[in-house]
Image (cartoon, rainbow, N blue to C red; front, side):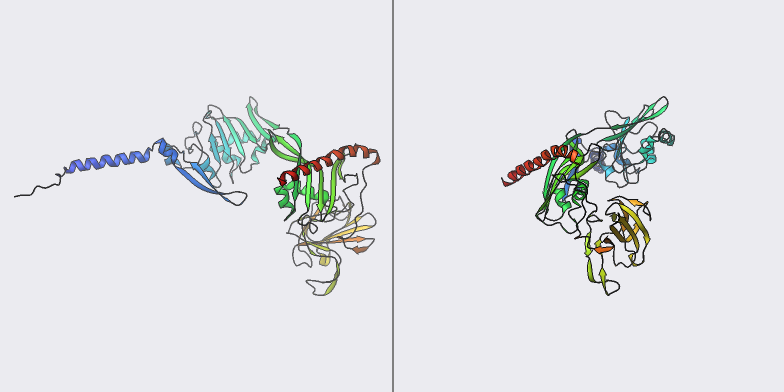
Length: 481
């Protein structure tokens, strides 16, 4: 008896080939035309390093249109959307994220509301010429724009990340160009019958008084940053107290500072800072105060809370935030000559090119090469005082023998010329021809508030100092909770 087979009869070979072809076609269709639901769920993960040196994981939806995938690599300008008529060779994408991931590639977007409006994000290496070309504008248009006025040339001074907004006509010609330079300034160019007209818009910010306080536990800069102060504001604070405090050697953990300063605000957003109005700095247990005052002649300066000038006849340190590498001594062994030799000044170590400032007003008696001192500047301050600055890399513009300088004016830059083992400033201070230690020398005072302005000054000073007292008390009370 023949057994009955349980295997189904085989299909004809033509049927199997047809079925395989249909399956392959369906798979290809799903690959080329994915559903919006699936497409929207695809994400790209990228790692960015934030200012706190922590890795941040970012998700970005992949919203590229299926019709554009074949063109993604056809142009270095990989995110030009909706090109103007007659320029179909430009690559199209819907978003700008992909352009921003390509170094040296600007991102050009077109708004969905108005396809004639294009926004360009400037990338490293871009020029106005390449940007105009990729937006679809001719070299003739660029020449016409830059030649329309001297001010219009500012559009060619590009910064990475700067946005340029183009408005084009129906036939792809430039109607207007706009760029925001900062929160306070923007520039515009618009087409008219005679050519292009340039316009600069300046936003006047609101100015409000703001209080800040910090305690130093590492450095002034780090503590000031934690307190919300900018680099520039921190430098201003150091300059105000620089006559009494040597920031190269006097700062200690536990020192504290507080200040009331001008904050510039537009739409409740800080866009900059102005002057420090009042400040208090406690250094090694001693407290210094400062109040900004503008006299009736319009001259502004800082005075202590009781009206004495913060400005002395000399700056305590001619190099900002340098490190003292050698002090004033009568028995120091010279590092190159290897013999005991008096060191009649103070050495401030700092990187090559660090600016050196004149310690006070005076006349330059020497600006040139001076033996083992290398490039040297000597300044005579009146009849009694003289300062010397040696081993300079070079001199600042306009610094020459016989010229006059103002206190704080940059006269040269840190170098290693002459007998020097590393970049530093050798600084000497003479009184009546005798070398003295500039770190211990008591500096002569500048004039206090004029007697006829003392009452006006106190009316300004008292409320500012009272505000700092009140703000500090409130802040300390909140920290105890």
